[in-house]
Length: 122
Image (cartoon, rainbow, N blue to C red; front, side, top):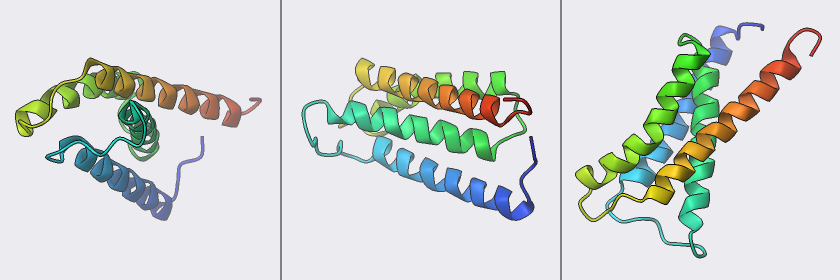
């Protein structure tokens, strides 16, 4: 795989930092975001963790793939648990944690497909 230029790495890092900021704001704001439809927050969790894991993997090439994806799989339920500790008005939701995990798995799948397709002979 071609290594991105310095400008490319900075752009990827900025994209990841922006995504992480948005996800952290959504997770740790005092009140949950308003529901657009019943259980819409589950879709938001899934999309947020898919985007966060993809931008994170693109920006952070130093950890091995196994280490990176393991950390992100642990991160999903962990932030959901931490949410109640940091914001007492928020509660732990098993379905939110599951949506975080699912989003990470979708991100990993997209990453794997992209790497496979961009590999020589792929």
